[in-house]
Length: 165
Image 1 (tube, helix red, strand yellow):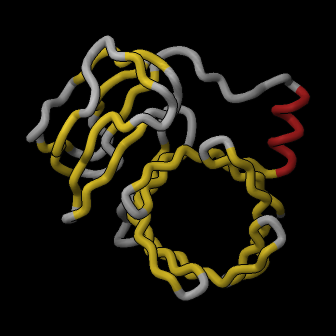
Image 2 (cartoon, rainbow, N blue to C red; image 1 turned 180 degrees about the vertical axis):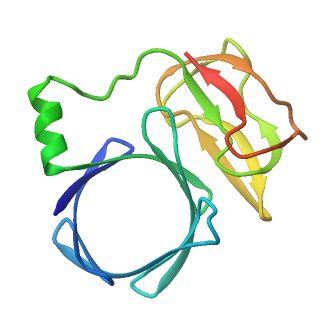
């Protein structure tokens, strides 16, 4: 089965070949992917390079945090893609987006204020977890609605931290 994976507006064609090989846009890579003790944390080795990823279901897409960067991703198989195209469906970037903590951590700093206009990719805040500082960025253009946390706050995974309208 082939999967179409959209990560931050860029599409990749993924095909699972076997337990240790995946084709990404025609390039075959060796992978080892393991869940860490029923947590949303995954150990990932791709072509000999080790990564740790936090993965959780966001409001509209999977949220994946790797090496301090948050990616918004959607995975669909070929059938789902055809059905969505036939129904005229697409990514909707309207309404309120709630930024939730991808993992437990400490809010190091907040880069925006309520009412501030932001562009897609602007840093909203920095969250420290496991001795690593992670920039959490706006997934779209908008205006910062409400900020529910302050610098120095400890947050649990999935805690609502701010909204972008």
